[in-house]
Amino acid sequence: MTSYEWLCVLVVVFILAAGLPSVRAITARCGASPEVSRKSVHVLMGLVCVSFPWVFGRPLPVWVLAAAATIPLAVVRSIPALRSGVGSALHGIKRPSYGEVLFAPSVAAVFHFSGGDPYLHGIPIGILTLADAASAVGGTRWGRRHYGVGEGFKTVEGSLIFLTTAFLCVFLPLFLGGRLEMVHALWVALILATLAMMAEGISDRGFDNMVIPLGCIFALDRLLLLDTPSLIWRFIVLIVLLVLVLVGSRWSTLNGGALLGSVLLGYGCAILADWRFALPPSGVFISHLITTRKHHLIKAFDHRLDAVVSHAIAAMPWVVAVALDRLPVALGLAGVSFAMMAQLAILDTATRNSVPGLSPRPLRAVLKGALIAALPGLVLLWPYAGALVIPVASAFGATLMAVLWFGKLSRSWRGGDTALWMVKGVLALAVSLTAFLFRP
Image 1 (cartoon, rainbow, N blue to C red):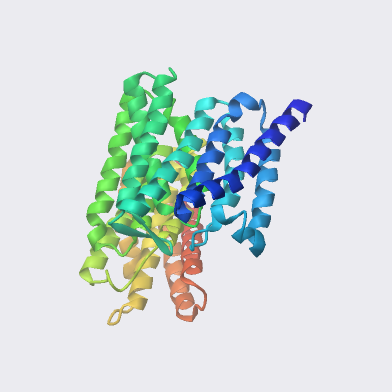
Image 2 (image 1 turned 90 degrees about the vertical axis):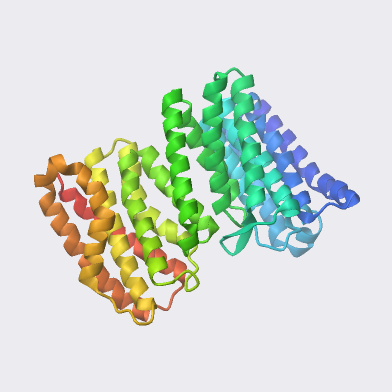
């Protein structure tokens, strides 16, 4: 590193180090709440970090800065005397949060992936700091309608404040900075702000400091390449999925964060690959609503984000591989279809194991998965019907074996629910590997 880069790193570290006690003193004098104090630190850090494209010419000094900022914060977090003293501006809230430790590495990663582009770097960091702070403070003060996220909750009012602030963080720089025309910037801002709002809605314990900036930079990078008609189409898909999930929420055992995660999963499948990839996960969700309503299970279960993560483990490797041109679209669609068939069959077995009066029916579970989850995707591969016979038969047999094995496992399971959901996801992904028998 050059002397100039070292000087810049030291200046930034000094500003951030001086900011903690300064914010603590100012917020204490004003009688501000711990949440306001913590978010004030984030805003200060964010405003400093937005300037990085004009300060640093390469990622290395930013990574050094991230280490220099994160290690002291981790030390403050681990030593009670420091935590209650200089660190009280960050740790004054009762709920556990890892946001301050994740913030600097996430900023460095965004700068690294942005290539120094001030829009790709500044907009995600702006959303993270300004929209997240406005949402937290506004939701704490005016929030009335709550939804569950992890072990806590967030408010609808806070999410709407986040959406509005995030929209301005995207639209104003793109339009006023001359990067895009007004209408083009408007659609990019609508999509990115909605996605960021949902990403914030599913994140707790400070993990939004990682999810929001990294998710936003990758989404923004793709959105900037699209023309206005393509953006409008993607916004329509996003809203349709959001409406489907929200309308069905009254019959769902998923909490609010998991419902938003369902929308992100379906939208990610549709946008990263193509719209057909959203059909198998949608089939699983619709089957979930029907089953929950039929057997009156709304109060019997409380499914959280780990249920959605389980489906993402099974489906997203195929979606990402297609998005990166590593696999043909037809092969990837077959993989997602088989993965969701296995997931639905396993879910049916798990439900019947848990509900009094019901007993597992493995063959019925596999048929249900094939017709509701796999068929919507496979029917669109009808030109390859002959080549699909062996893969479909193999997936059917593998799903039946997975259902039988999972039935035995679940009866003797002594671990937590989250670990069991991860087992379901890995098992469904393993079943989906039968798609490699397909030669489109």
